[in-house]
Length: 623
Image (cartoon, rainbow, N blue to C red; front, side, top):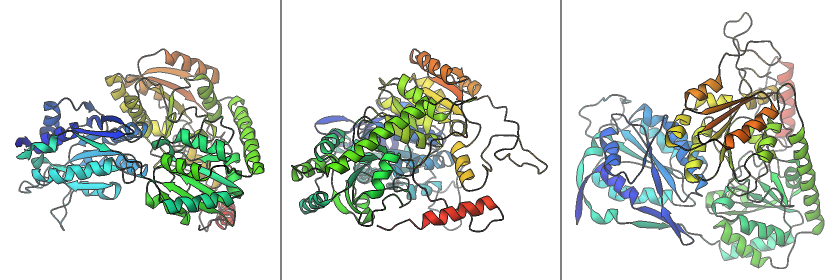
């Protein structure tokens, strides 16, 4: 039996029939489709979405933003659900590449459906086509290849029959997921074909919990039993596997302390006495101190980014070894670790059985608990310390953590806030902390907040964004208002690129190019450096937020910020809380990040930074 449909109609019908199941819970995989229409998709995918409204269409304002929304939706749904995104050909399609890269780097599934050039070619070059004198089979959509986990171009309707199952295989794979791109030539989208009816039968994709190799588990148990100073590095895989409860039992029974990556923060409650908090370049002194001396690192669901390893300087014990629990063999093999390729929850359960009756040395466990207590006291001090005339970022985060909704999700991506949040945020449940730091994409925040709210409408979402990221991509405020999804957006304005300003100062470059000011001095167009008097730009971000439909509260200090938080909770519309903060008051770091200063320079400050870098560079290790 066949059904005559256009390529686009067949695509939409197929998406509607896909579900996932894990641990007995079944749910539709696609929660809808974001899109911006142009000539490259309006008559194809656009017509199909109109014909089949069961796949809810959402209107976006920016193609990059809608991919961020889909990725945040997928991440908050523990990768068991996602959204599709469609764009027109050319610039609309190319605008999704950044979002695709962020999704793939962060290992979260999104389906991208960009329009493409005519497959029949006779009308080329069409509007927005990138021509090549070397090939007629290339378009801007080829740029998606390196940032997609699966890429295909559908040049004939019947190619969907083989392409769609492959796309779903990758999207639902715990190990291989990321951005999936199906390029849809403008003419092929509208062509009809007799598709087999079986293609559209409901299909449930079982999300497996693969078990690690038994011999590898036995070797891992032997390594752990012989360790004197073991520690766990909890990554995003702990949360995606829903292994947080298992990890808490593992820690309680073994006495092994835990440091958390950006993606893994919330793997343990902040008040667990063996939760040492953030590890690495943005880590706490508690986690980083234990890491320096660890003789065994048990990495769970982490890809060991340079921030986690402090650019390979964090683990300094000359005898340090690694046991890596990861569903992806690629990540499990890192640092020459003993590979436990399997689901985090199941692997921890099996290790617990093999470690029955064993605990880490008591002195090691007690020392970690003392460090935990000392760090919590440090956080109390940073939360309570008042800065004038402008509040510091840490005190504003303290007010939010202590006086905001404790069940809310806090979301961020770029600037100085990820580092401060990683160190200071007290996570109370596994899905509370949502910081996109794999790609650290400026502009993710508002769009990502919308995605979390769509995935979890009953929970408050605090979207934290600096003025730099806000100016890059704030337009999805209008989408949130249109769809009735309330976000509480906390806009901290420090008049520039705060994180890079701090990095610039540490490299002896005086914040060059990081302040938002009018040009200064005699040289035309020179941007003010730190310490120079300059006029701020007359940009009114609060007025901009109002113009996009948000309810805005403007705050002139910490007390006003606390009051605005309470007022925002009573609102049903998207809220923007605008507050200025001090760009020079940061939270001290405890580890290093490798950013090489210039090897030769006339500047004494740059020379000093280079000398300091060379001392630290000598500590980098191969494992």
